[in-house]
Amino acid sequence: MSLFVLSDTHLSTTENKPMDIFGARWTGYTEKLRSRWNKLVTPEDTVVIAGDISWSMSHTAALEDLKFIEALNGNKIIGRGNHDYWWTSLTKLHKLCEENGLTTLKFLYNNAYCAEDFIICGSRGWYIDESNRKMPQEADYQKIVAREAIRLELSLAEAVKLREEKRAIDGIDREILVFLHFPPDFRGYVCSEIVAVLEKYNIRRCYYGHIHGVYDIPRSSVSGGIRYTLTSADFLDFTPLIILPDDNF
Image (cartoon, rainbow, N blue to C red; front, top):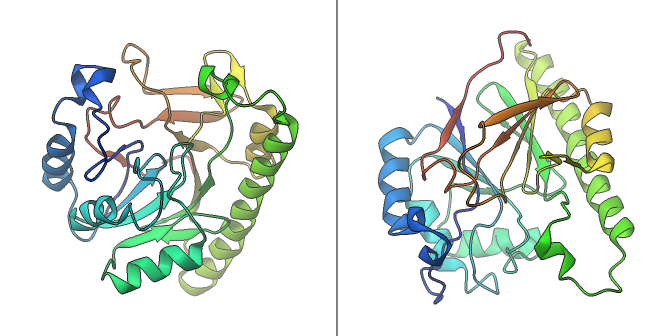
């Protein structure tokens, strides 16, 4: 069993949202995603999808996109992105899955999961880019960032608790991995509030999405002792990225 990651699927099976306007890599992307995913991922594996899952505007409208993900191999842990307007309460999402037989989907929100020999946690995060600047002028950015830092810390606290519980059972000391939608450290921009939380919990690896159309950069970079890895679907050419154990952990 293996752990993989891929973010920003931007599915629109019932929405008129063509993605090829954002570049040639997006042409036929749903079939690319399906074939490349199922060629690599087995039914026993787990894939983390770190946000921007569907263009739908409600959780019921997103059902067909969630069914598409359900039909892919493996178990999926889904985080929230800035375009996931369909995301609602966990109660409603769990009910939607139960009523429609979606058994391979889990939702990452103020919680944590054990997958393979890792502990999975994370949140949306925050990142100031051009799309954020188009938000209303009255938006309180400091309040938004503080809220996202709190959500990340809630997830990390659950991760620590889960790691201790699992260690008591099998003696394995699992690495905690953080999955964010927004990059906390990218090309000179640093969200210090989010990074401070990562440092507080001694996180060594963080995976993020959101960045599109940039294909000439390294997949990973190290800053402040933390390795940040870009996992946007178009950057990975719609092929889930395997996460291997850290030999130094």
